[in-house]
Image 1: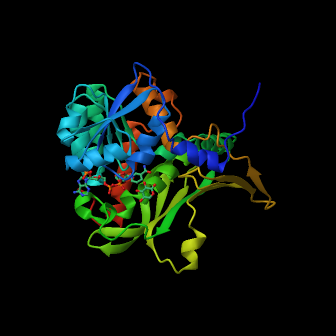
Image 2: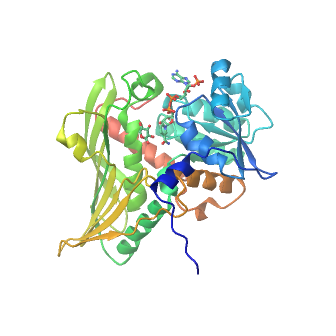
Image 3: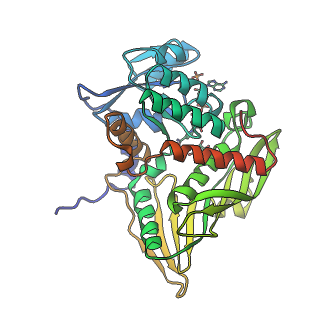
Length: 375
Ligand SMILES: NC(=O)C1=CN([C@@H]2O[C@H](COP(=O)(O)OP(=O)(O)OC[C@H]3O[C@@H](n4cnc5c(N)ncnc54)[C@H](OP(=O)(O)O)[C@@H]3O)[C@@H](O)[C@H]2O)C=CC1
Ligand SMILES: O=C1OC[C@@H](O)[C@H](O)[C@H]1O
């Protein structure tokens, strides 16, 4: 069978931001965006440009002039005067919700009630109770609701998870997994990420990814929180979180998960730069598996397996596949689900139970850290 080489780094970057929009299928899904959000071009607008199966038809912002300017910049054909208006437009099939965390629940609930399928930014909601209500509603309405843990849909993530799970299936036992997303202050102090009224805090941001990766790659669940050490940057707001959780699952009793999430590391510190690349590691009785840059594997990643007895490190081939971004693979999965595919057969799919368990673990870490769960 002929094999095709994956596009190189520059080609992958170009593919993530296509200059033109392809022609669309007659039955392409029509999706609208809530808010002129910073993340929407990367997570939806650009990936949709090269997909025949979905069209970004409109954006709504609190100020319609802002929506119009955004639509012009990003080649979106239409705008709506309010979030309610876009949600209730019968010509729209799906809604992308990239509002601040604290608005995920309210506006996703309205979208589901209006019969829309929803691609919802992470974290799903402010807390686990809200997540349960949303997914129960999606089920009752027979609509697709996907929490956008985009990294899971990339072929490198799927490969790495299988590699680890195959090793476990051979009888090896996980002892420790660790996930790190730890950066300096990329965002200003008044960013939505640090606003309690908008359900901010680092556990809601980088932290929810680290937890999700611990659960997804290991196949284990968080049983309890051993330790949660927040760096408080304003009342109830964690700028960094270091936590250790006890994991449960039949294949690896006693395994622990460690996470570090930060957006407040000092720029002038060796530690900051040592961990600047997000990484995931899993240690079993015999080996240490590492997936470097697991959260943005399109740009670059590495997968290594270290033999604990010999110290030998095997560097496995990188998995860029067609070279698409994590967001494009995620959008393909979302479209398939809306078109009726069984989500159990979509690799990486984030189920209702999965989103609920992730949010439950976020709540538990907040409680353990002595902070309020988000409202
Ligand atoms: N998947 C990923 O890789 C990423 C996901 N995210 C997630 O996406 C969401 C949005 O993040 P990001 O795009 O950085 O956010 P932005 O700062 O761009 O805010 C998004 C939108 O929120 C709207 N908004 C509504 N109410 C408020 C309010 N009270 N204060 C501020 N904004 C408000 C604004 O809409 P309007 O235009 O109507 O004014 C704004 O455009 C978050 O949940 C975040 O966790 C973020 C980055 C990466
Ligand atoms: O991927 C991400 O990296 C930076 C974060 O602040 C952002 O919200 C997150 O989704």
